[in-house]
Length: 327
Image (cartoon, rainbow, N blue to C red; front, side):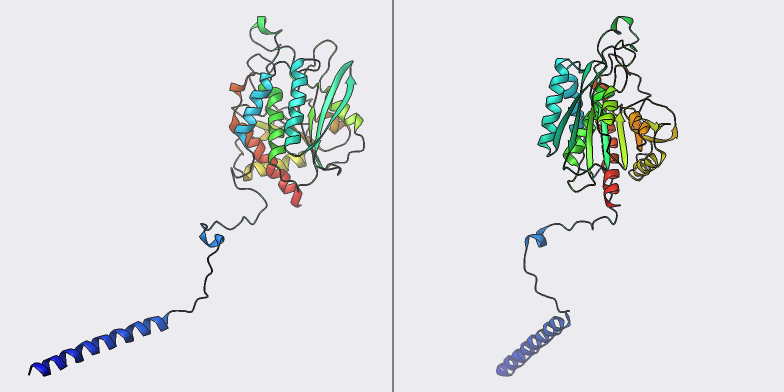
C-alpha cells in the first residue's frame, strides 16, 4: 500500500512538471522575434524629441544669452564717458575688438573724420564674402544729459546704458551665438551717433561715414538696433523703415510669442543710423523703443535695462537671420 502511494505521488509530480514545461515552451514560442541589441552610448541616453520641422528655434531655445548681454551693458557703462576722444571711448573700442575676435570674427576699424572729429566704425565679419545683412548699433555716449529733469545735471554725461550700450550688447552676444554658416552678416558698431544739438557736432556721423566709404555694398537688409534694453520694452514700427523687413521681423517675434514687445502700430519717425542707408537706396529698418523715460538723462543706468528685454531682441534677430539663411 505504501509503495503504491509513493508511485502515485511521483506520477502526480511528473505530470505537474510536464504541464509547467509545456506552458513555458508555449509562452516562449508565442513571443515575437527581436533583433539582438548591442549596447552603445546612444542606447543609454534618454530619448529626445524629434527635431523641429522648421528651421526656427523654439521659444527660449536660441543660444543667445540675455544675462551675458546684460553684463556687457554693465561693462560698457563702467568705462565712463564714451564719445570720440575720451579715455572710455578708446577702452571700449579695444574691448569690443577683443570680444569679437575671441568669438571668431575678423574686425576692421574704419577710421575717418567728420566735422573735424575722429570717427572709428568697427566692422566685424566672418569671411571676405560680401554682406547680405548688416546689423548695426552705435557705441558712443552723449556728452550732456540735456533732458534731465534736474537742471544742475544737464551738463553731466549720459551713462548710456540703454541709449548705446544695449544695442552693442545684443550685437556682441549675437557674435558669440550665431552659427558660422549663416548668410554673410556684418556687425557694424557705429561711432559718433548721439551728439546732435551740440555745437560742432551732428547726429549719425559714424553711419554717414560708413555708407560714404562703403559705396559698393549691395544688401538684403540693414537692421539698426537702438535703445532696445528698456525693462518696459515696447518696440513700435518706425515710419521711415522698410516695411517688408519689418513684416519679416514682426512675424518672427509673433512666432516666438514676443508680440507684446514688438507692437503692431507705427509710432515714431526717426533720424537714426538706418537713415544714411535709406538715403542710399538700401533696405533698412530701425528697431527702437523711443518711449524710454530716461532718454538723455543721468538716469540712463544699467538698473533701467533688463536682461529679459535683451533676450527678446536677441532671440528675434537670431531667428530672423536663421530664417534668411535658409531661404
